[in-house]
Length: 379
Ligand code: NDP
Ligand code: MG
Image 1 (cartoon, rainbow, N blue to C red):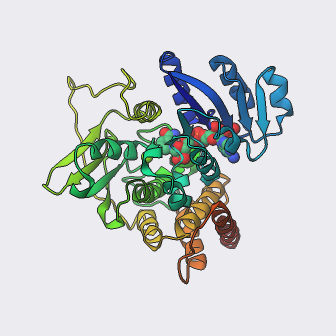
Image 2: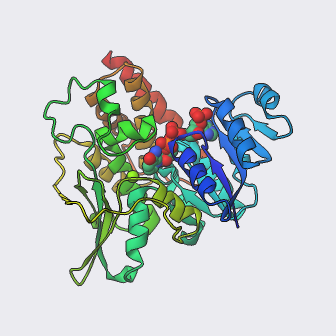
């Protein structure tokens, strides 16, 4: 029986993780849950259903305590960080945004392993996270779960490069992106996910973040991390070895596969997700990415290569720009422009070294303020 903690339990990944627990009651027991402030009823309902004795919410705890009865409620901005330190076999971090970095570091700091969906932890604080060692983290992001699995078939010294796949999002074939609406950007062709990661998939920012994520997770030079469009989202990523052989991991697009693999500590759970149906025709296409239409990837790569605090600035500016797009304050193409502008204004000079979480927070504060200023100028 594995004891697990879920941060972000009310979100897309969190809910799917709980469904895996429900389908495998002999394998998992949930010992802590946390969420933001938007879905308190659901959070309490989850705790009751799964017999969880402690929950965390960023909201004021009064209402949650009324609903929760005997269940202990930790409230306030540090709630997820506290829940992350509950002793357990693995903490699933499925919070959205770099606000997830603190909880990731807190979990690792007490010796908990982390199943990491929150890619922003690695983008904003990759060196801080990886200082705890590679064995403490199992990726949940489908591409990185795929790479993790593909790496098992060779030695790291035999790796030539890795290839991340990208669906290409809803605008893969659209030439003019200037008049994209929010609804169009939220209509992802192959994956159903939370709002922010869906918008990031439409700009391909998500792939940029994932290149940085792969750099830290697998200690790979950026020159060894490629990305390719794969519209079917069945091959989740590939590792090419020095002998010319490429190993791919494939399954129909469904996050339950990578979530179950990570929760179980890189073991395979029976029927975690549906397998490919080989009785039907299957077509897998792979196409190069058009970097002119999708400048986010090159920008991410440049920030990653410069390193230091730049990836944190890049991510924080993107979080602000995505919120502004969702709120109707900027157009779709302005998202990347705002991020690029913020990076340019703040990233000059030598890279800023990151020593601890407060360094990241300070950089992010500046990046958010800069992005807000640039958004104001565009209106
Ligand atoms: P959602 O937006 O669906 O869910 C986010 C969760 O985080 C919610 O439970 C939310 O609570 C909680 N939360 C928000 N703010 C805070 C906070 N300050 N402290 C604690 N919890 C908070 O996101 P997804 O599930 O889509 O994504 C989660 C992470 O996984 C992201 O980093 C994403 O990039 C990554 N990912 C997601 C994939 C997917 O298929 N969804 C695929 C690959 C990666 P509340 O309900 O109260 O707002
Ligand atoms: Mg992904």
